[in-house]
Length: 230
Image 1 (cartoon, rainbow, N blue to C red):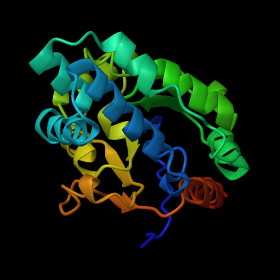
Image 2 (spheres, helix red, strand yellow):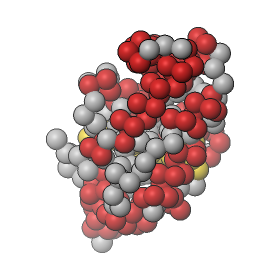
Image 3 (cartoon, rainbow, N blue to C red):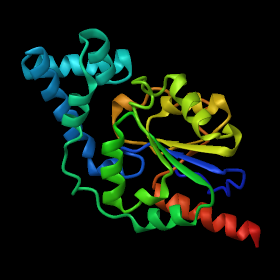
């Protein structure tokens, strides 16, 4: 359930996950990525599609991402994998003028923090018309291929941009990825997705807000801030 919209007056840094967060999971863009990951694993390891999918999912659960598992277990070079799995059709994602207007009205610095590539983040945000709002696209390469929720990428992002955690808010669709953010002192916002595999870590005090529609919720934050200031 969507919680009462706060003002978040203390927030000066806005950190957003990309996929299924800046656009709604209902558009199912991940289905394309998921299929292409299975295809790449099948080709790389010479497996049939069923076994490739099993390996893909086991690596996700054991190593945080399929990419991390393939690199650690099979010594795979990451660039061809990232290029292949992110070569997808973005047309299912419609424009979100409410989100764009809210990002424009929110004061402070804005960042993307994703387990995907910066190239993918650039394509998606340009498609949505919101690329210009983000100071940095901090991706899996900048994270030294350590995926969220491992702590070092969070610390690296904060250090690189001089972000004070207590003045930051992080937005994510995967609950466990918010645990390190909360531990560091950030305000956390969960934008739930419908996928069963993502629900680990839903319970706990590391989730401060849960929202149904990111654009509408941020618009509410803007209105609440304006009302509070007035």
